Length: 198
Image (cartoon, rainbow, N blue to C red):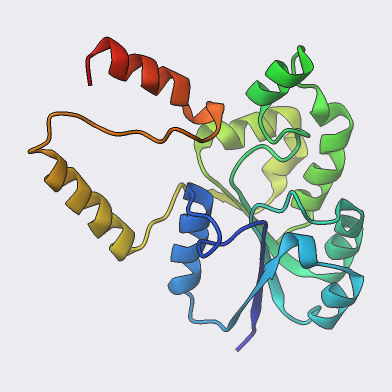
């Protein structure tokens, strides 16, 4: 049975986010032997040593991008695309905020990312909208074996969400995280709670 190497910036044991929970649920359901590799720890020797294994790339912003051509030519791999890695900020909205201009990364930086994705055995998207944005910017990705996967959660995670929902029905308010990415709508959530006296 072929072994699998999963590359990610973080795993659920490091950080509990949607991408990490999805990755963990997929790995837990896998019948294959899994090697977890932090993206920042990857180097040429590790890639060569595990070249006979199937690789899966999740969030890999800390991966040495100079290794991508080697990976594309040497490995069998799939991509779990959680965001918009063709953008240097991994988000076109964040790009607009930070750079004060519309994202145009697909014209330069994103070409290497799209080429890497093109050479994969499969690409798994989180939504049709996300996939279509990629297809608009990189039409040749339509030729790849790709599927909209969406987020995936384990039975345990779903049970925890169900229990939290059921327990909250007797409460008069909701809580929200005070820290987190602005892209998750934290400021809008605060404003909504304040406006609605929650």
